Image (tube, rainbow, N blue to C red; front, side, top):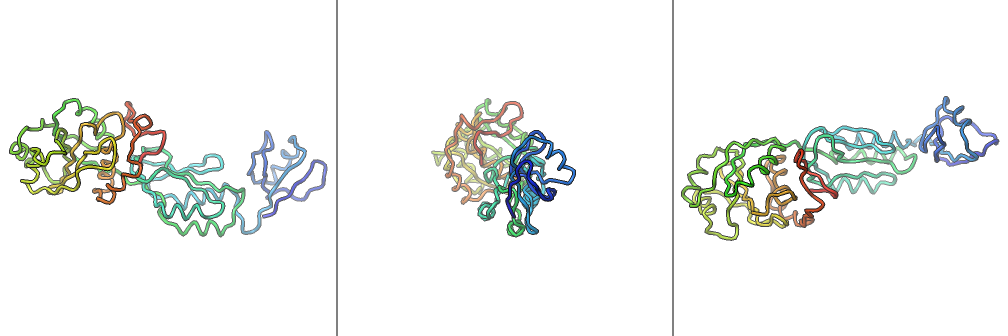
Length: 326
């Protein structure tokens, strides 16, 4: 790459194939790769001095390189679209964003490469921008793109696998917002049952549920080992995965399993217009089928959820925020 300047009235060589380092209004923007047919318009424009780049044989212009970088990042379920000097990757469907953060770090250590994404495990809606790719200089060496191409599946989006849901509730007010939230993910609420007050009745209700269901229990006391829900689950041979999450609100959420059914205990603060622990756990369960204890522990980083910045829209229940949500 060679940088040079020309002044109005001075002799200049062939301009086709050179790259503008500045805007030439109204005809061209900086970064424009001049073609032979552009020269007349360029000379007719108002300027006194032009700064240009002459790419070398191993250089790639910014926009072409940015598109190549975006294609390196793209995977199934993501669509590439130009956006000025950047290229964006948009989700083709609702899904869970998965970022290989170590690969992303390696990409951004390559001189001239800038890739920025949503946070790993963000819930994305169809059409939402998941990642953006840009080459920061006006040209970049081809070897830099070849280095970037070594990284595979840096950005993915996992589809949600809807599940049939049974809700056991004590408070009727949770049914509508919980149903709306579940339906956004494609789930079907098969049955809503008032949570019985005693362990035997709870056991009888749970015994009727089929394998593979998602069962949401609202109204248990996570602080009481002798709560009827826990007594019933223990008697049925259910496995308690974890009681309590390093997240607020929703710290007392719990997760158990029985016969391939997942059972989530929803605390009183676990559902509302704000984002809670439930909103971090549910998408991973639907997209990945399970959530490991290590992943639950990792929720503590960023586990203070700001209800003023993170909310569910009332029109489509889509997760939105002023700062990324996991």
